[in-house]
Image (cartoon, rainbow, N blue to C red; front, side):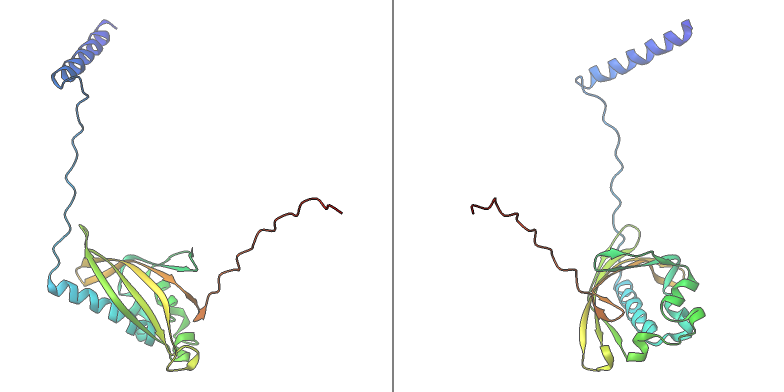
Length: 203
């Protein structure tokens, strides 16, 4: 017991001496310097742009039964769709990603956007380096809706997380902030105007 009390006294004394030498202030905790973003080369930018272009081609054609689309993600990559501001469960794993593009167990049959002749177009692609790789945003347009080759509509934008793997750049995460649901414009529910109660009748 006496030794434990002695150790506590020594600890308190050391702490007091440290504060005294620091002008009475508590010693500052050491902070790690912020990690710097990686330096992307011109080839890195081109390869990331090609990744997004391959995404459009793969989802428009259901090539390789949807696995060309799925293989654009890392093994633990996830696709997160959001419709009208509401998120739905993410799609993760090679088989599920192939299915969401119309392939896999679905066999590329009765894929709505392919049957309509819809094509995905990605524009205004901005890529930003990060310590882990890169992030990006890109707007999406859909052309050919309702079987009309001249009908084009905006379908929101994507927030992307890219990482460089042994196979090249891949999606670690892709979040689609959609404006359309199955090619149809999502109409937000009407805003209800609160009813102001009328005052007591004077009649």
